Length: 291
Image (cartoon, rainbow, N blue to C red; front, side, top):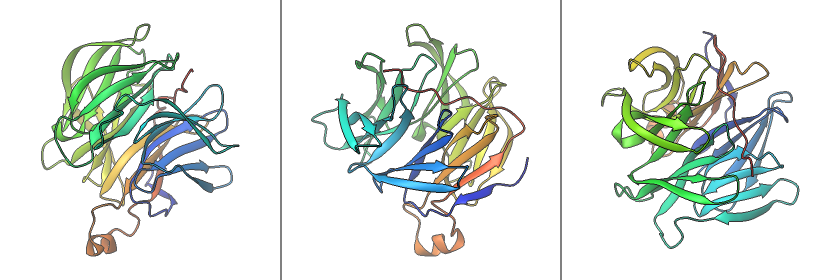
């Protein structure tokens, strides 16, 4: 595998949530703390930032146009032309110290996204599923920091990360109904490994996990829990990753600089940047929200 390339020395505080819009050939990604939605065009090597006005945990393309955002206060649609945010629903309305974090759509067009405490309180978050009819279902609670979501190639297994557990948990998944069952640990990271954050999967069914505090994205075999290979990232806080490009063989990686001392930042000046690497395997597509 080739070395990582620096796409943008963006120096965002908390880069997250990359997703590939195949129709427009654009990469969406976010700065959670900066409250900005970024749109990167690889063809022109240009990046445009949109001020959203509240913390933004995840972005996905929308089949009918624009995007859907998981924000601090619920699910919203966003129109790039009018700059209009429209609330779909906020399942945690009235809870002041949580926000949405990572999220992703399944192959049926449902948008899965979870919440986390903003003050570190354990177990305050939940995982939700926004269906294509606009209804929102709470899948389960007792989550501390809802993070990466991915599926296997035939959509019979969903993988999920609650970061402080240092685990990737596998669930049997029914695409027709969106139901989860039979949870089991697929990957367990040690304290020395770092913390699993965002993730994606590839056509071989392997998982690509951004490791916060680990300076890397690791490729794991979920059947054995074994790390197969890793991508070294010039930023300690690798936060998420997504496959992009015509052949879905370019992995984009976000990173963060939040919480790092001035001395620490001097040692990793590219923290908060956007990176990419050409892979030897084709990755999972970004599915659009179907509503």
